[in-house]
Image (cartoon, rainbow, N blue to C red):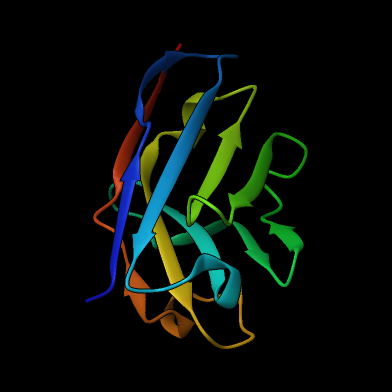
Length: 121
């Protein structure tokens, strides 16, 4: 069974930082495209960051503030988020797929349950 479990979300003030983790079982993260998506109430699910074949990708709204990485030995992917803004408030999801796509949530086969990030003014 494939399972993706996010952790590390919470409440932080504007300008603060968080590191989200996604622990995977049933798949090997080095062999998959791994993405981070976020969804705020009333909004569509939005691509935030991803890692594929040792290359990283970022959405326009987060580039320069977010960093995606992975630890193959721990079979875990990470999202370091710095200089947080209130508009970053959302549920953040980890997702995986074996294909080459990275940008669209519909391309992903496996999803975690999400972790809430709330940024206060």
